[in-house]
Length: 193
Image 1 (cartoon, rainbow, N blue to C red):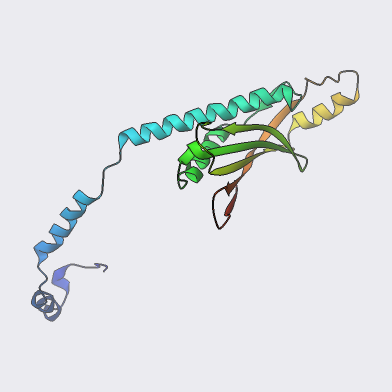
Image 2: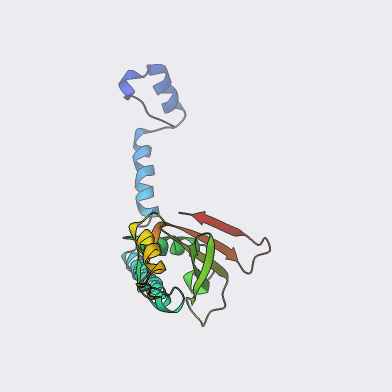
Protein backbone atom coordinates (compact mmCIF):
# COMPACT_ATOMS: atom_id res chain seq x y z
CA UNK A 1 0.00 0.00 0.00
CA UNK A 2 1.37 3.42 -0.97
CA UNK A 3 0.06 6.55 0.71
CA UNK A 4 0.09 9.54 -1.63
CA UNK A 5 -2.02 12.15 0.09
CA UNK A 6 -3.79 13.13 3.27
CA UNK A 7 -7.02 11.58 4.47
CA UNK A 8 -8.89 14.84 3.99
CA UNK A 9 -8.32 14.68 0.23
CA UNK A 10 -9.97 11.23 -0.04
CA UNK A 11 -13.66 10.93 -0.56
CA UNK A 12 -15.74 10.20 2.50
CA UNK A 13 -17.17 6.97 1.05
CA UNK A 14 -13.79 5.23 0.96
CA UNK A 15 -12.93 6.41 4.49
CA UNK A 16 -16.21 5.08 5.87
CA UNK A 17 -15.63 1.83 3.97
CA UNK A 18 -12.27 1.41 5.72
CA UNK A 19 -13.84 2.08 9.11
CA UNK A 20 -16.64 -0.45 8.39
CA UNK A 21 -14.04 -3.12 7.59
CA UNK A 22 -12.45 -2.67 11.00
CA UNK A 23 -9.59 -0.34 10.15
CA UNK A 24 -8.80 2.03 12.97
CA UNK A 25 -6.23 4.80 12.54
CA UNK A 26 -4.65 3.82 15.87
CA UNK A 27 -3.93 0.27 14.65
CA UNK A 28 -1.45 1.61 12.10
CA UNK A 29 0.61 3.09 14.92
CA UNK A 30 0.53 -0.23 16.79
CA UNK A 31 1.84 -2.02 13.68
CA UNK A 32 4.82 0.33 13.55
CA UNK A 33 5.46 -0.12 17.27
CA UNK A 34 5.55 -3.89 16.69
CA UNK A 35 8.47 -3.56 14.23
CA UNK A 36 10.44 -1.53 16.75
CA UNK A 37 10.60 -4.64 18.94
CA UNK A 38 11.06 -7.23 16.18
CA UNK A 39 13.93 -5.65 14.19
CA UNK A 40 17.10 -6.11 16.22
CA UNK A 41 19.52 -3.28 16.69
CA UNK A 42 22.96 -3.76 15.14
CA UNK A 43 25.17 -5.87 17.35
CA UNK A 44 28.22 -3.76 18.17
CA UNK A 45 30.27 -6.80 19.24
CA UNK A 46 29.57 -8.50 15.89
CA UNK A 47 30.60 -5.38 13.97
CA UNK A 48 33.87 -5.11 15.96
CA UNK A 49 34.57 -8.82 15.42
CA UNK A 50 34.01 -8.49 11.67
CA UNK A 51 36.31 -5.46 11.48
CA UNK A 52 39.00 -7.31 13.46
CA UNK A 53 38.64 -10.36 11.19
CA UNK A 54 38.83 -8.14 8.12
CA UNK A 55 42.03 -6.48 9.38
CA UNK A 56 43.68 -9.82 10.16
CA UNK A 57 42.79 -11.03 6.66
CA UNK A 58 44.33 -7.84 5.20
CA UNK A 59 47.54 -8.60 7.13
CA UNK A 60 47.55 -12.20 5.84
CA UNK A 61 47.29 -10.95 2.25
CA UNK A 62 49.98 -8.32 2.74
CA UNK A 63 52.31 -10.90 4.35
CA UNK A 64 51.69 -13.23 1.42
CA UNK A 65 52.69 -10.53 -1.06
CA UNK A 66 55.70 -9.51 1.02
CA UNK A 67 56.94 -13.08 1.32
CA UNK A 68 56.34 -13.79 -2.38
CA UNK A 69 58.25 -10.82 -3.73
CA UNK A 70 61.63 -12.49 -3.13
CA UNK A 71 60.69 -16.17 -3.31
CA UNK A 72 58.19 -16.34 -6.20
CA UNK A 73 58.31 -13.02 -8.03
CA UNK A 74 62.02 -12.20 -7.88
CA UNK A 75 61.49 -8.49 -7.35
CA UNK A 76 62.43 -5.92 -4.76
CA UNK A 77 59.06 -4.18 -4.46
CA UNK A 78 55.37 -4.97 -4.87
CA UNK A 79 53.26 -1.84 -5.09
CA UNK A 80 49.64 -2.36 -4.05
CA UNK A 81 46.86 0.16 -4.81
CA UNK A 82 45.38 1.84 -1.78
CA UNK A 83 42.55 -0.15 -0.14
CA UNK A 84 42.95 -3.11 -2.54
CA UNK A 85 43.64 -5.65 0.21
CA UNK A 86 40.82 -4.11 2.27
CA UNK A 87 38.34 -4.58 -0.62
CA UNK A 88 39.51 -8.14 -1.17
CA UNK A 89 39.17 -8.96 2.54
CA UNK A 90 35.62 -7.59 2.58
CA UNK A 91 34.69 -9.67 -0.47
CA UNK A 92 36.24 -12.79 1.09
CA UNK A 93 34.21 -12.23 4.26
CA UNK A 94 31.05 -11.72 2.20
CA UNK A 95 31.63 -14.94 0.23
CA UNK A 96 32.39 -16.90 3.40
CA UNK A 97 29.31 -15.62 5.26
CA UNK A 98 27.06 -18.24 3.62
CA UNK A 99 29.35 -21.15 4.47
CA UNK A 100 28.69 -23.50 7.42
CA UNK A 101 32.01 -22.70 9.14
CA UNK A 102 32.37 -19.19 7.75
CA UNK A 103 35.88 -17.97 7.12
CA UNK A 104 37.32 -20.74 9.30
CA UNK A 105 36.39 -23.29 6.60
CA UNK A 106 38.27 -21.41 3.87
CA UNK A 107 41.41 -22.33 1.99
CA UNK A 108 42.61 -19.48 -0.21
CA UNK A 109 44.95 -19.91 -3.18
CA UNK A 110 46.68 -16.62 -4.00
CA UNK A 111 47.91 -16.07 -7.58
CA UNK A 112 49.27 -13.23 -9.65
CA UNK A 113 48.37 -12.90 -13.32
CA UNK A 114 51.36 -11.65 -15.29
CA UNK A 115 50.91 -11.37 -19.07
CA UNK A 116 47.98 -13.85 -19.09
CA UNK A 117 49.92 -16.43 -17.06
CA UNK A 118 48.92 -17.19 -13.45
CA UNK A 119 51.80 -17.54 -11.04
CA UNK A 120 51.05 -19.28 -7.73
CA UNK A 121 52.09 -17.19 -4.77
CA UNK A 122 50.75 -18.90 -1.66
CA UNK A 123 48.09 -21.05 -0.05
CA UNK A 124 46.41 -19.57 3.02
CA UNK A 125 44.52 -21.84 5.40
CA UNK A 126 42.34 -19.67 7.60
CA UNK A 127 41.93 -22.23 10.43
CA UNK A 128 43.91 -25.46 10.26
CA UNK A 129 41.75 -27.07 12.97
CA UNK A 130 38.65 -26.94 10.72
CA UNK A 131 38.11 -29.19 7.71
CA UNK A 132 37.84 -26.87 4.68
CA UNK A 133 34.34 -26.49 3.26
CA UNK A 134 35.23 -24.18 0.38
CA UNK A 135 38.18 -22.84 -1.60
CA UNK A 136 38.77 -19.33 -2.81
CA UNK A 137 41.18 -18.58 -5.60
CA UNK A 138 42.35 -14.99 -5.54
CA UNK A 139 44.01 -13.67 -8.68
CA UNK A 140 45.83 -10.36 -8.40
CA UNK A 141 46.45 -8.63 -11.73
CA UNK A 142 49.60 -6.82 -12.72
CA UNK A 143 49.29 -3.23 -13.91
CA UNK A 144 50.89 -3.21 -17.35
CA UNK A 145 50.31 0.47 -18.13
CA UNK A 146 52.89 1.95 -15.80
CA UNK A 147 56.25 3.63 -16.31
CA UNK A 148 57.98 1.04 -14.11
CA UNK A 149 57.09 -1.77 -16.51
CA UNK A 150 58.76 0.09 -19.39
CA UNK A 151 61.75 1.11 -17.28
CA UNK A 152 62.32 -2.47 -16.14
CA UNK A 153 62.13 -3.67 -19.74
CA UNK A 154 64.92 -1.30 -20.84
CA UNK A 155 67.15 -1.85 -17.79
CA UNK A 156 66.83 -5.65 -17.98
CA UNK A 157 68.56 -5.58 -21.42
CA UNK A 158 71.71 -3.77 -20.28
CA UNK A 159 74.40 -3.98 -17.66
CA UNK A 160 72.05 -2.60 -15.01
CA UNK A 161 69.93 -5.74 -14.93
CA UNK A 162 69.40 -7.30 -11.56
CA UNK A 163 66.84 -9.88 -10.53
CA UNK A 164 65.86 -7.82 -7.50
CA UNK A 165 65.64 -4.42 -9.19
CA UNK A 166 62.26 -5.10 -10.70
CA UNK A 167 59.09 -3.60 -9.22
CA UNK A 168 55.73 -5.31 -9.64
CA UNK A 169 52.76 -2.96 -9.63
CA UNK A 170 49.38 -4.52 -8.98
CA UNK A 171 46.25 -3.35 -10.74
CA UNK A 172 43.19 -2.37 -8.73
CA UNK A 173 41.33 -5.25 -10.39
CA UNK A 174 41.26 -8.80 -9.08
CA UNK A 175 39.34 -12.04 -9.52
CA UNK A 176 37.85 -14.25 -6.79
CA UNK A 177 36.68 -17.77 -7.60
CA UNK A 178 34.74 -19.66 -4.94
CA UNK A 179 34.43 -23.42 -5.11
CA UNK A 180 32.33 -25.35 -2.61
CA UNK A 181 34.05 -28.56 -1.59
CA UNK A 182 31.14 -30.43 0.02
CA UNK A 183 28.18 -29.57 -2.15
CA UNK A 184 26.03 -31.92 -4.18
CA UNK A 185 25.56 -29.19 -6.75
CA UNK A 186 29.27 -28.34 -6.95
CA UNK A 187 28.68 -24.61 -7.09
CA UNK A 188 31.41 -22.33 -8.39
CA UNK A 189 31.11 -18.55 -8.09
CA UNK A 190 33.38 -16.27 -10.12
CA UNK A 191 33.60 -12.59 -9.25
CA UNK A 192 35.68 -10.17 -11.28
CA UNK A 193 36.36 -6.88 -9.55
